[in-house]
Image (tube, rainbow, N blue to C red; front, top):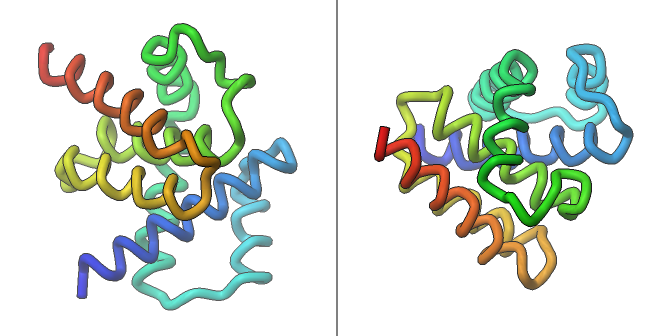
Length: 138
């Protein structure tokens, strides 16, 4: 059941990040507004809130890692779905130590297949795999 709560929570966190990307603002108030409009089961919401809190705290570091890993693609040039999924993936891989990187990458690809443009799964996989390889080399 923990896996299902995390899967649902991860998807909820993606929706919040995508929403925030579209309106140009990720704040605790915007997250609360999202929850009022889109209620969720408590365990999934708790996992999503944990991820969102980490992203709020580590936003600059996450974007710096993405910028380095995607040298030919600026964050602004990426589509909003891929950008949101990548931020979520980097957050999990670097700042949430209880999630294996392989799970993070697989789940990011799943979200990219479901919500992203046709090239999103390969793009997301390439960036996250590059970051994983760099992280393991340290």
